[in-house]
Image (tube, rainbow, N blue to C red; front, side, top):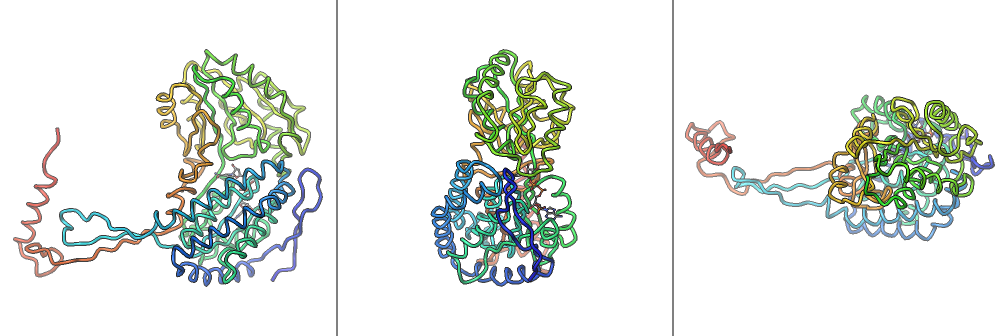
Length: 490
Ligand code: NDP
């Protein structure tokens, strides 16, 4: 095995949190080989046995919640309370995936229709084998586990390559799994930099790649996967919009908006970045938002910018927004690396980087709109389409707007509430990626449908799939199909 190492650092203090191997292509080769064997063993267990093991893992994670939250805090800088919340959510997802895997994926009969009257059709979803999970650093437990828990529950082995900023968390997640499943390395963690991940996704024995990270890296990962026709689920960035309707509860909307934009220092893929407020309540909303923002402090309510390079992106967006819009809160002085204080800017042109590109910092742009339709049009005019929020007292209008929002998920009168509902799928459209984690769709994402049709008896007078077929056989079929499908509806 490799002897080269790298350090994970506390972004707030620069202290070394841990030292980890830089796994090489040769290490990847060995680990994927072991995963293949483990995958066969895991897939051969009964669904009840897998469920028992996963529920045990859930208990182990829950019992180690404080230790894990501390490690997340040390590697990302986020407050321990936020890290704890992330683990609580992870546990609920793991519980749902374990309990629902058999129901969603297990064998069932399907209706075979009149033409298939003599057939029995069964459908089940079988494991893929080895799933490679590439994760980001911003929610180092919740985000990768959205793929890992569902992939394991679907009967696959997992090889996880965490971000180089949060390797310790990844290593610990796999170690704790081994307490519940000691026999085979069903869930392994590889550490290293981008090259380690690149070697992993290029391995032809990997049956599927679950990638979470930036759109730019997703393109590189897909290019590598194209070589082996390896399917990919891509959970990428976002530029989520927050719409405030004329009849919204302004205090609740401002509270939710602020938390959605500033918590985790804005380093949330479904964080609020753009706010569109209907004219009638615009001034009241902005007043409320800025009053509340004045009480939020970087370093107290949220942590530092985890990835040092991101500070420059945030600075560029703030400078651009301040130059073209009207400052409500903060300004260029808000950047005190590694911390960034809250920044709210109004009337920033829609074609500027601060409105178009993912900022991934504690910043908000606010725009006044004529009505909710204009708000929705502007929200939808983005290359990204991950999440979004609508605040309105009119639940019918809110539901209609949510449906027409070009995003994978929309929360109404709450912030990112969809992420806390394990049965709801999570994923984006456009530059935010494709495929889904969480829920039944998230389980099926890591399985292949297996269709079986069994003939119970020969269909009398309709011997279609045989060279012994006569003209009368076909004629009877045509008559039956015309009877069934030939009537026009006007
Ligand atoms: P990156 O795209 O920089 O990295 C993501 C992961 O890919 C890291 O583990 C990285 O490893 C790895 N990687 C880098 N290069 C390669 C390669 N060539 N082949 C394989 N793997 C590679 O994203 P960040 O870590 O900076 O995460 C932030 C981004 O993630 C934001 O855009 C955010 O919106 C998005 N995100 C999306 C979520 C979603 O569910 N849709 C959830 C959370 C975040 P290393 O770090 O070692 O370089």
